[in-house]
Length: 399
Ligand SMILES: Cc1ncc(COP(=O)(O)O)c(C=O)c1O
Image (cartoon, rainbow, N blue to C red):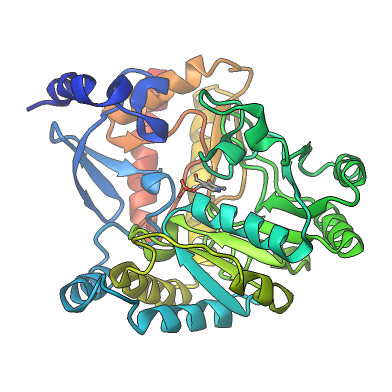
């Protein structure tokens, strides 16, 4: 059966044919909806076309699809003990590994999705302070639950009334937002950097980071870092550590198990007591196989010094793309860190050129995204990047 035939069957039994961020509805024609194989940094769609993948499952893949050592650990654990009436020892080992690695962290709670983790952070911030308001950056993504997604269908305003917004990297705006909810401020949620979809990305201004830290100290509120998307790619520590800022609570997910379903909340000592009296749980949150996978993933990422490696290959990719665009006479703006690049054509506000380029890239066997940040991984070695650039040179030539 072809992708088209599967789409037709899906349209009968799946709302809109597909939902959420993996629906191809928002993408130009030519994007495959269904896949059948993944290996290293290559994906094969259901029609048998192979692509070099620059989305990494929208983040979860970081060491390569089917990484032998990680997969073996997960499979062994699944065989021995995955789910039962309590966790296995892996939950302790993983909490120890993460609290050793992440400097602000003294304890860990595990869940499944990034949005579980961001929600738990809010609950703990509120439990400790007895207050209600969590400031979030306008346009930042923290998940699809009503408090985080806001303004989507099925979400009344009451669901996010306690989440007033500020503008990321704008000091006056966050100072003002905190002042407005003085007396009721439980926490401020920040992203690793500004990685809102459909916009150029912006790295975090270190001065902004320091001011947010000071506001949280002054108001006795929690500084909550959402490292779900950028975690382990920018740093093996919490990503705001490089700005000299220690956060109180951090949310992790996506790549920490190299694609196995696991998310984590990490917290510093003063938040431990509130965490221990906050009821959070889920039927699958104690699964051992994803924890075994995460343990080996962390080892692999540390051994490879993953953020540095991925930054280097990402820079190679970025420089190559810039050179190709210039040679073909196209203005290209690349934003965000090299590990998670966003590529847009100058003046292409409706992404018409970007869409066309991505279609041409697909036909050359390279899977890019026209308006979302992309992701590189340990599987993107120099030869893969060179192969991708050769193919993208041809795509750019056809633009
Ligand atoms: C920054 C950020 N936070 C939270 C989430 C939510 O994670 P999940 O989709 O696993 O619930 C995402 C997902 O894309 C994200 O990018």
